[in-house]
Amino acid sequence: MGAFGCTSCATRPVTRCGRCNCTRCEVHALEAGERCDRCENDWQDDLVTRRAAKLIFAPPLAIFAGGLLFGLLLPVSLGGAIGAVVMCTLACLTALAAGAGVCRLVDGSARAMFLREHTGGLPPARLLPSPPRQR
Image (cartoon, rainbow, N blue to C red; front, side, top):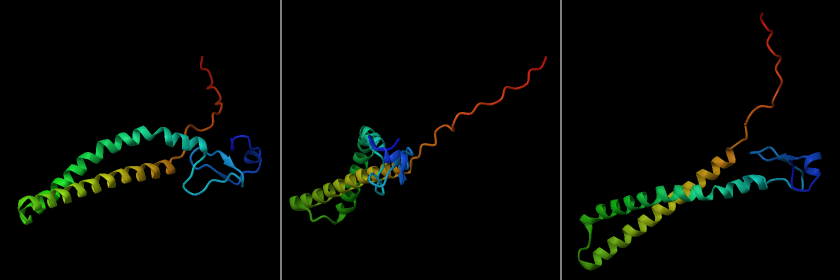
């Protein structure tokens, strides 16, 4: 139940994992924002899902933000090739920043949900008396 190979984690626990309730001794105590090794491996296993969420949300928002800035700056552009280069550069940088912001948002919110996750699961099993038979 405790850290792998440590009897103190099972006999003298100081803290427990907030997700799976495995106990830890003072030597193996978890830092704030950290879960046990088994739970952190679950976090790493969900990397594919988080990457898919980033690919779903980041490109459309980046395109929208870059296009919106391009459309807003179009009336005040300098004109000519230099003005077009400046506007395209600003639009691309805005799109890049918006995409990076969405990726950080997805990672941050996924980590927050992971840290709040608790194993409620099923309650402990108990034996119920059988109902009386009616004849």
